[in-house]
Length: 193
Image (tube, rainbow, N blue to C red; front, side):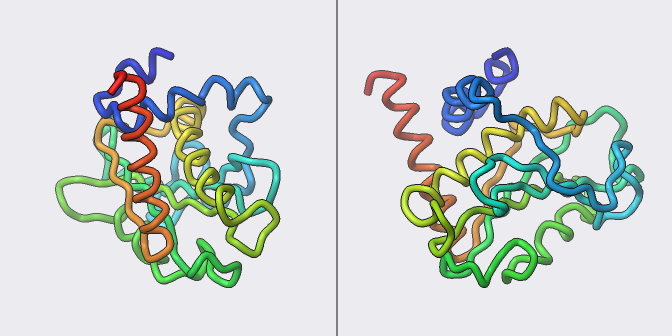
């Protein structure tokens, strides 16, 4: 897809592009889980967000996209993206709403510095959930990232995928490291290394 050819981050986006087409071919795509405080014009509060489903197997397969208020953005400018993956010992008890990182995404979006960010929190099936654990939990995080370009395009969310950072806390840190390794492995295989 043209979207991926224009990306300057080959390690991550080659992985995203490789399965993007097959993901859409299976009938998946953007499905709003809930819309809380974020009309399509983004609103004016930094706590505004939208949830999007990336899978149908479990209710925990969604991403939460936080967009800064209009007043903190330059019209038409793409914003860097920080993907936050929560920790919690891969247990159901800890989720995107109560894990230790809950202030990170809103803080990134409400940044008063020279750069505002779009923050994306990833919820995933944990080890106690059907399909959670290895490899389902890891696949969930990869699928969540694969859906971001479609979300950005469909809802005109100004995500700059050339400026993307992955951030994980505890178990989320392990998932982020796995994702980076998987992207590097796919990139090496594509280059014939």
